Image (tube, rainbow, N blue to C red):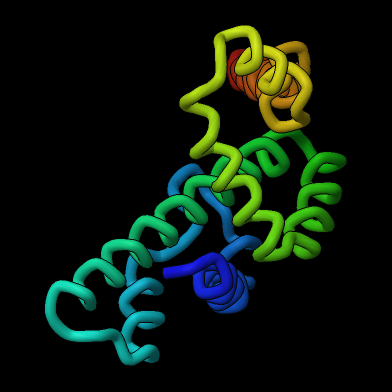
Length: 158
């Protein structure tokens, strides 16, 4: 597969998965059966060449799934403000951007540790000093503890 075919396949994945982004849970974004549907709609070559193409498509599918899962986990597990921003970001996500991110990950194996730390610290998805998700989860824990305590107090008063 060349660059153009990879971007086209990523575009197909994004188009087919547009409804999946709204029902994000703690697991993967993309349904594994989606790959079978996409492969079924496309005539793949037979033999070793076809097997290589299917493996390449599977690898691309898994990479797109991983990138979308990371993006959704960041935006959708950090409160309503981040959820709103995340929906806007994910709806405007293009196949070219995803392909660019995936190719930058391939080059990452050649980077030095300082470059990796700098890149991780400067990105919005991997910032080590961004505590939106942690504060949202801590708030949820506090709310559940307060509610449990209030319910126990009401029951004790009856």
